[in-house]
Length: 147
Image 1 (cartoon, rainbow, N blue to C red):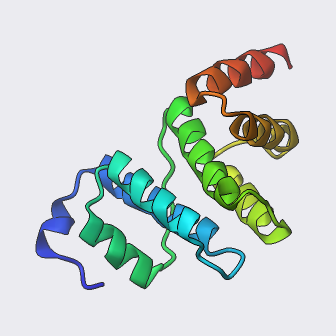
Image 2 (cartoon, rainbow, N blue to C red):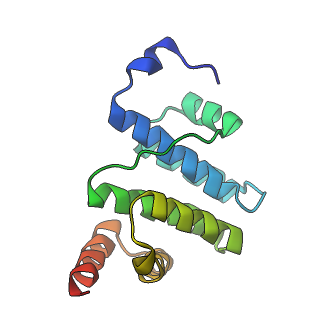
C-alpha cells in the first residue's frame, strides 16, 4: 500500500488505531488460515476503529509489520488487548502461535510479564463467557490493585 498524501497528517490516535488493527490482522492470520468468522470480525472492528472498508482491504493485503506505539491510557491498552484476544477466539479455538503473538502484543503494550497469566486468563474466560470489556477492565484493575 502506498501511503496516501493525506495519511501523513493522520492524528496520532488514528495511527495507533491502524497499528492496533494491523496486530488484529496478524492474530487472525497466526494459524495460517483467515476464516470467515475472523474476516467478519476484522471488518466489524475496523468499522469500530473508524477504518473504512477500503482501508481494511489495503491493510489485509499488505499486513506489514511496523513499530507499535501503544496508547498511554491503561484502559485503551486493555481494550486493544481485549480486541486481540477476541480476534484470537473468533474461530472458537486458540492455538499456541496465537497465544505467543497475543503475549508479545501484551508485553509491547506495557503489561508486566508477571501479570500476563492472570490478565490473559481473565480476558480469554471473559470473552468465552460473553462478558463486557468494561466489566473485565474493572475486574482487572481490582486484581491489579490487590497485588
